Amino acid sequence: MAERMRTEAEGTLAEVARPGVMISNAWPNSREKEGATLAAIESVFGETDYFEALQVVDVPFASERCSIAALVRDRKLPMTYTLTRVFAENGLNLSDLDPGNRERSWRAVIDRFDEAEEAGAGTVGVVSGARPADEERREEALRALEDSLDNIAGAVAQRPLKVLIEPLDYEAHKRCTLGKTVEAVEICRHIAARDRALGLCLDTAHMILNGEDIIEAVETAREFIQEFHFCNCVTDRGHPLFGDRHLPFGSPGLVNTGLIAQKMASMRRMGFLNPRDRPRVLCEVILNNEMTSMEIVRHCQETLQAAWKIACGLRENPDTAP
Image (cartoon, rainbow, N blue to C red):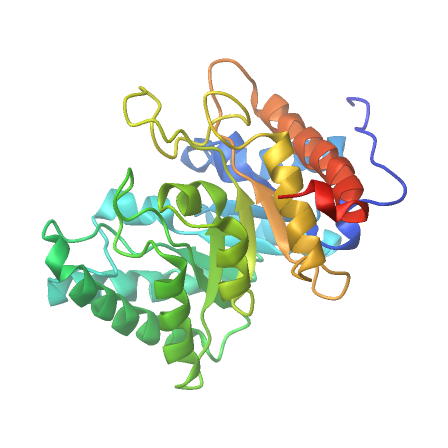
């Protein structure tokens, strides 16, 4: 067995957050082969005890889902079961202005609740879907999205599951209906007013591409945030890697260890990162030709550890933080 990666004994991010690993990015093709997602999870937790949460996309194999459930329950790992690839492969869109496809889309989410539970997930993750080609109809699409999410929230209310939606960028790259944090918060509040619950996942790449201030967005949405992603992005529209491509941290993207440290320090001072709630914090880096899956995992762990060490210094000397 590979030598276990060392973790710091004191002053760790784990005191105020649950560091998580995104199996869906480090092993993007694992869902195509039975047993591969389980093997990936076992590889991570066989090498490091740093991570306390994980995210997977759908797992098509029932026996594998049961095995994953046994593992995550034994380790008490909160897991998010994300349906982004189900959406992409089936033309689903929760904000579709075509009412027939929109209903097909929200029913497809509800139909996946059983398998999410079977896999041991506590959270199901969704996205809005593509925005209308006509920008003037995006507001209409947002209202359609709210209706879809209200149906989903109603169906999940009697289950041991939560549902979260991740706002993507609405104009730069992914061009989804739901982009701005304030729009997502408005939907969450409307659903809460009907005694239903919807959570949010915020992602640094999407916030940056939407022109948002990350800390202001966290403050606006903090009561609904269930998961937070540090993700790199390239904002130069002339660059071949422009957009949200889940790059390793650093150049050519804007999100590096220093920026992550600054945001961590700010989120600690504002109380979002705290010992009571310990929100799930994950790094989103996709497998590439330069790194293996486990090298991606190590890169994410090392980035979080290095950033938190810097953040602790910024927390004690706040005048040096932005």
